[in-house]
Length: 128
Image (tube, rainbow, N blue to C red; front, side):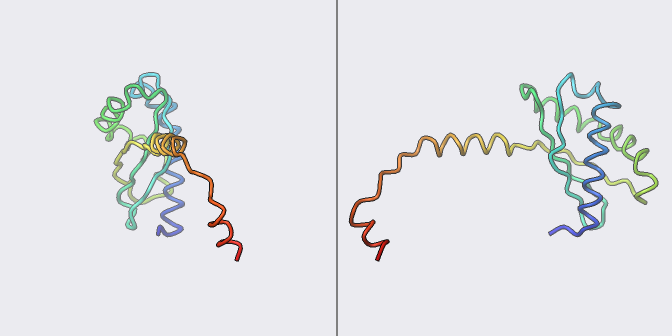
């Protein structure tokens, strides 16, 4: 469970990273649209884990690797934005957010399920 402070800092970093990717780091995205789906901050506010989603998602592993290689540049830009709000700019760790893919996979699995209707005896047992 994150504290309120962790949640606030995470939301601020999420907002600032979104602006950085839109304005300052377009060269890293290769024309892809990046969404920062979540930012989790450690209790000491020293590490921020950002979960990214890409559209179109053809080269998402390449894009993630490119972003990870340029973490220092992104952290510098983040430091310029949060220098008056945070004492220490957290170290950034970027991860691929695959929740949309996982949800689509689960939907596909559930749509393929065949659930037979309940028999008359089971209906009588549940009504009693």
